[in-house]
Length: 263
Length: 263
DNA sequence: TCGGCCGCATCGAAATTCGATATGGTCGGG
DNA sequence: CCCGACCATATCGAATTTCGATGCGGCCGA
Image (cartoon, chains in turn red, green, orange, cyan):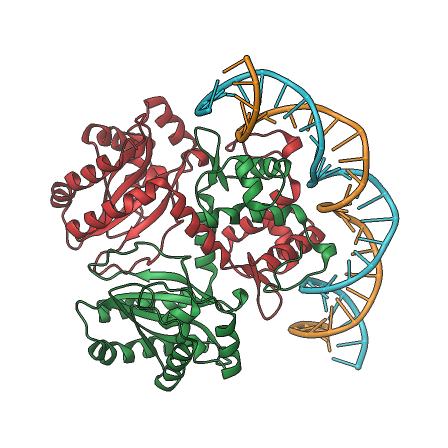
C-alpha cells in the first residue's frame, strides 16, 4: 500500500490507484520480460485478476502491451517511443552527444554516458547512450541498463564528489553482489577506491562489472558540484595494460566530463 | 473519447479512464519534450487541471515524471528502464543482435534493425537497434525513432512482401511529406520502388530520409511470410556509388534478413 | 498594485473502478 | 474419453475512488 520511501511521498488524496497499478503491471515485466497470462500478471504485479484484465485491456488498446497468438500479453513497442522522447528531453544527453562522438573518435574505444540516479536512492546508475568501438560485440544496446553504483567506475566517480557521510550511507544501503569473480565486495576496499577517485578526478575499474573489460570514468557535475552522471571509456584487457589505459584515457575522460559539467 | 481505430477496440466496461489519461500525459511529451507546468500538461493532454495534478503527482511519485527546480514536470528516466525491458523481451531483437553484430563487422558500415508496425496501421517503422560504423556521427541513439514506411528502404522492403491492395491502402493512408529535398513524393514512383524491391528481394534508397545517406534494406518475414521488420545497411554517398553499394551489400542484407526470418 | 499563472489543497457528488463470479474454450493427463 | 486446471472474456451490484469546481497563498511581469 505505502510507496517505497525512495520517491517523494504525496498526498493520498491525489494518488490514482489505478494508474499506480498499471505501472505495477508494466514493471512486472522487469523481473521477467516474457509474455504473461492475465493470471500471471495479476500475481506478478500483486493485483487481482479483474484488475489485471482491465489494466491489460487498457494498455493493450493503447499499444503499451501487445498480444501474442495465444492471447498472452507482452510489452509493446510504444515503450521505445517513450524512451526516445526521454532521451530527446534530457538536457544533459542532448548536450553530451556531440562531445561523446568526438571523444569516441579520438579514443577509438567504446564510450558511454551514464546518469547518476538520486531518485533511485543513488544505488544504481543508468546507462543512457553508448558509442560502440570498432569491434565491440557485447551489447549493442544498453540504454536503460542499470548497474550498481558501487561496482562501476562511473558510479564511483560520482560517489567521489559526495561528502563522506553520503558515500558511507549509499554504500551501507547497497546490496553487494558479485557481478564478476573480480567484483570487489569489501566495503572498505570500495570506499578506498572512491577516495582514490576523489584524489585523481577519475575512477578506473578492472573487470568490476564485466570480465575482460577495463573501464575508466569521470563524473559530470551540475552547477552546484553535485554529480549527475559520468563519461565512461571502456576497452579490452587483451589490448591494454592498466597503466597504459590510465595514462591515455584519464585526461580525455576528465576533459569531456568537465566540458559537460556546470550546465 | 473514442479511441483511434488503429488499436483493438475493447469493451468500454473494461476501459480505465484514469490510466488512459495518464498515458495521454506522457504522450503529450512526444510533441514537445520540454518540462511542462500542470496547466500546460492539462492543455497538451486534453484534460482538466485537476486531473493533470493527480496524474502528475502519481507519475512523479513513481519516477515516470521528474521535477525541475521550478516545479515543472518532465519525463523521468524510468522510461529508459521500460524500453530496456522491451528490447530484452522482443524475441526478434534478441535473435537479431548477434547476426547484426556479424553483419556490421563484415560490412563495416552502419547497420540498423527496424520493426514494421502493424499496430500503427503500418504507416511507420520503428528503429530498434543501431550498430554504428566507424565514423558515424549522425545519431548516436535512435531506438524509438520512427520514420514513415513509404520513405525508408526498410519500410519499402516490408511493403514489397504485402499484396498489392495492402500496399496501395497503406500508401493511400500515408501523409507524404518531404524528409529531404530528395524524398520521393509521387505515389506512383514510390509504388514502383516497392515493386522493384519485390523483384529484387531488397530495397535501395538514396537520400530518402537523410541527405548524403545511401541505404539498403531487406525485409524479415514471420513464418507466414508477413514482414515483421528489416535489416538496414547505410553508408555515405561520399564513399559509395549506388551500383557499388548495391553490389556489395544487397547480398549481405538479404542473407541476414533471411537468417532472421521464419521464427 | 494589479492580473495572471503557478503549485498545492479541499471537498461533496457520483461516475468510475472494483472484485466476486460466471461462461465457454483449450490443453494435458489419467 | 472425461476430468481438472487454466485460459480469455464477460457481467454486475456495491462503493471506493476518482472527478472537477473551487480556494489559497506565492511569484512574476506589467
